[in-house]
Image (cartoon, rainbow, N blue to C red; front, side, top):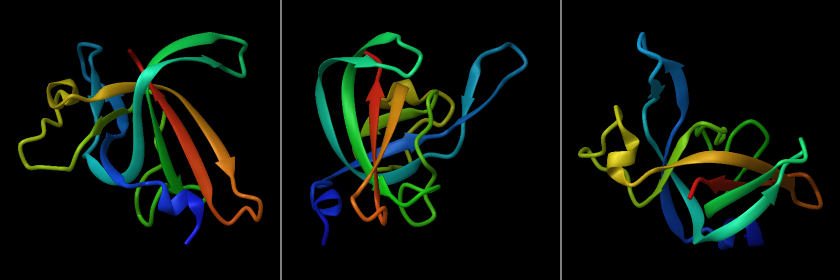
Length: 125
């Protein structure tokens, strides 16, 4: 078992971004539960566009290229992520009511053999 797999002892719920509604409000897809490592804390993230983002939490999600786990989507900027397990009471219309935070930056780091990928996901404050 790899370090990337062993370090993920928590569960997160991810809502993928979808198109906006007719009023311009964002919509999210069906929530998916993922294994992760979730850290609260403020960070400064430097993007490829030379921007500095102030973030409030970081999650580490493993997978292979194109997926974060078997059959699970890769976290994308604009999606929502919350620490916890997927329950029927979670609100797909407004993930913030379930404690979710918007993803503002995602970084992909492969292992040395390029057999696994660790996705580092930063969320808004």
